Amino acid sequence: MTRGIPKKGDVLFTTEAPLANVAQLDTDEKVVFAQRIIVLQPLSNNLDRTFLKYLLLSDLAQNRIHDYGTGATVKGIKSSLLKKIPIEYPSITEQQRIVHILDKAFADIATAKANAEKNLQNARALFESHLNSVFSIKANEGWIEKPFENVVDDDCSLSYGIVQPGDEYDNGLPIVRPTDLTTNIIHLSGLKKIDPKIAENYKRTTLKGSEILLCVRGNTGIVSFASSELAGANVTRGIVPIRFKHTLILQNFGYYLLLSPKIQSQIKDKTYGAALMQINIRDLKTISLSFPTQMEKQLSVAKELDILHEKTQRLETLYQNKLTALEELKKSILHKAFSGEL
Image 1: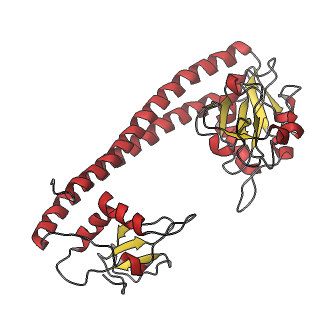
Image 2 (image 1 turned 60 degrees about the vertical axis):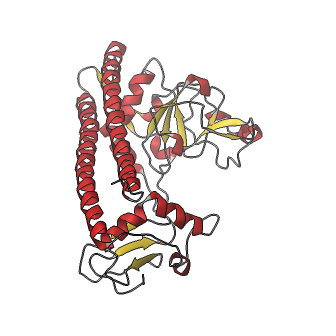
Image 3 (image 1 turned 180 degrees about the horizontal axis):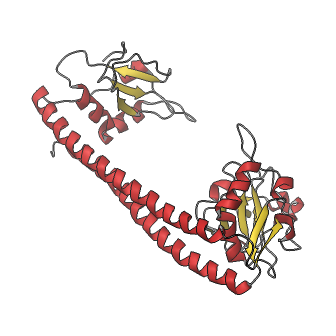
């Protein structure tokens, strides 16, 4: 194999970051690649290029390549080492038979994945549509509008969390980071622990449990609930803990209120930055929140959205599991193809 002028059908291979990603060029147009991408072209007609692509995607080849790879932080492989990795392949006729089977199987899997992804998007869109309809009600029948800073509890300062949390600290204080906001409720398991002394100057963001955690740095606008087991924990610079005045906004209603398109739109409008997107506390405090004055109405809305949210999450889990299973199926078929089981 050699690195030559790319042409349609050639195999593309990444030599680092990430190592051993594989694709096949599907255009005859002139293409320029980054330095870490090399073009693999068989030196003879005894090796089918599409077979080579599938071979390099197999666990057997991937394991060998990573064994030859070097580097601690960023693992890579030199082209000179890549050429020395031994590969076994059958006759061209057998290669073409295997390619035919894999092409058909992967095409079917791609169709199934596309359908699952569409269903996943539809499930999310259904919830977002209902959320939008609930909070698009004009504030003229029992709804009032107030700035963010006027609806939070007296002991909620709308403050940033710990700026420099430091390294992991055994049996230390749990902290929640923006990267932890992946579910609607954040639990203790998996959170980073820091030296409790670092948090002494950040008592304003000490959690009591049941706060709404709003991301204000990076993917601004993401919200999650802090579970009750997080009482005494803290947050990092990218998160603002929120406790609403219970006489104005129910906490559960407030969670959906912050997820609503109107509030999310205001957050995005006030977000700034290039490399790192963020929103200032000063701007966050001025965001306008519309909500019903009757607690019964808030409770009713929250319960309705809880039910729909739970159904949506079940569907998302179902479709996400299907996508994971399809990826595992691809790996299984590749393994069979290159272990003589097809």
